[in-house]
Image (cartoon, rainbow over all chains, first blue to last red; front, side, top):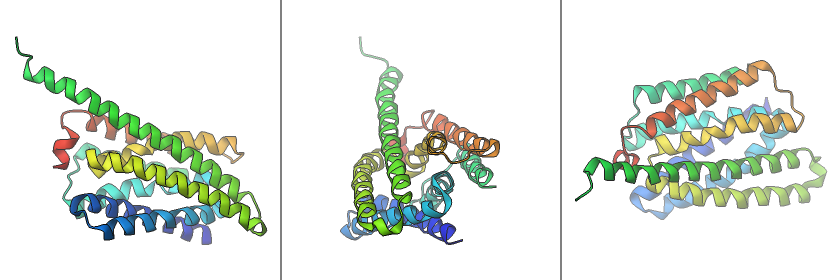
Amino acid sequence: MIGWIFLAGTVIATVFAQLAFKKFHLVHHKFYLVAAITLFCLVVPCTYLAVRQLGIGRVYIGAALAYVITPLAACKAFGEELTRSQMAALGLILAGVITYNL
Amino acid sequence: MPEHPSRVECHDRQPRTSLLFGLVLLNIVLQLVNASLIKLASSHPYAKMPWIAVILAIVLTLGFARLVVWNAMHKRFPVSIAYPAMALFFPCLVVLAYVYGESVSGMQMAGACLVTLGVLLLLGKASGTRDPLEASS
């Protein structure tokens, strides 16, 4: 169970780090750069602790949720647009992550 | 005789697509090295913490190298295209997990295939009709 909690930490930190990094490029405010770097640093120990419990395959495939959540969050945060086929692609990635961990 | 506008646009698009694939490939290689190092660190008992700390410090350093690559990607492409493109890392990761002795079932192979299909669909669309730079502005 503790492994899944660390995996969730990895995903959340990755998503917010990506968003903070993009925001830095949009507004050029150093706060977002510092936030992004701090979150990136947090990802490493979280991933390590998750891998100890779950193994490299489950953790890195599980971390793929960040690849789905980040574009969706980017739509909300930055007004980026996703086409239907892009949404379908994200759906396939999500299905893949779930299938891997069944 | 001046070159046809659509031809110029086609020439411009080619280097941009190549740049996207180049940056994605570099990021994937760095991710695989990091995954190997984390697997190596996780195979040591907690008592060997100094050794683990050194490995994690290397992972962090390589992570900053990835940050430089991300920087180049974020400057040129929208997050919704550039970031999911790196999901091509997953089929490679399944192979890596197998090499390190983790069990990889048929279901897990299917999961990795689904992820790859999703990425191919995403990339096919990204290199199609819309210029990523235009999409980000």
